Length: 242
Length: 205
Image: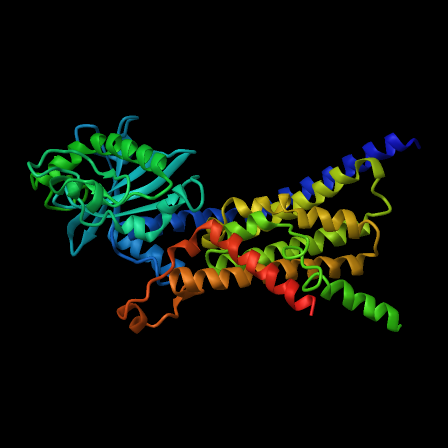
């Protein structure tokens, strides 16, 4: 047997053995991994609404229970009208409602934004007044750890709590990430529309701000309804909101 | 028997102190800068790397007579890559939060020079058990530095250990502040530098 043939044979056998092992591991663990991803999404959604904080270790069962009790997901069309899940069209948008004591407490908008290096996925919870942010979370991103990656830290996400997506006159302006601390770089009148930026991650902030503006603009029709106090009951239960 | 015993002990203990992969061989610096902000991630990384080095050493050593010389680097790479992906998949399935924090760094274990270095310089020439122990020793040597750096960084940078507050509230009230610099990568460089200095001083006594 020539040594070249032996090398090729060895390589083939090694590759086969390795790929077989990995395939087995991957398909065997897929169930656990998918459940983790789903739980993580639900946890972030609950966290954006302020239902759980990031400190205590929440058990998977309690997260699933809390999610099914307090969160209701529905679809709206671009004019802000609720559509049935089965009849939804391509332009319709997903919204999650945080139900507290049989009333809508807040609505949660999925943020699928463009970051510097890739997509940033998260949730933005807005109070039922349609203008105040309840919370913001990020569950997936590919920003540089330590720089743009700071968007997943709680100090940055806490920044958003209580900020407004409308200006003093009540007009939509979105929320932006400042270059530095808000109190240093933003005029007093506009401070409610800005959050503290991350040092060393100006571009991540810039991209995230721009994407958030686009997303919130799409959801403006929903926000307006909340601002005009048109959503009082839980929609979808009896089709009341139409 | 005496000689084999001391050799085994030497194989496992030398890389922990006298020939530490980070402090003496200056390998694996990249990941030790990245994952040492918190103690928890450092511990998980240390365990993951120790297991990967130990098992890659074991596998390479078992196959050392079968691996053709001319493709040995690729064969080692293939084995290490498989183990790294396995570790990553396991973390994703059972320790999802930590795997998110470690993000790319688990996958990057493969680029950690310690793994390939040990496979190439030790496992190819030594029997399986000894190679396995050598991997364990090097992993622990790497991990202990990682944990020491993370201990200092988390304590000084965020006043916590393993996520629990350890600096008493009274300190903050009387004007103590966390050192934000400790959370940035350069701080790890400085701490590693100081550790190298400490270790050399102690060794040269």
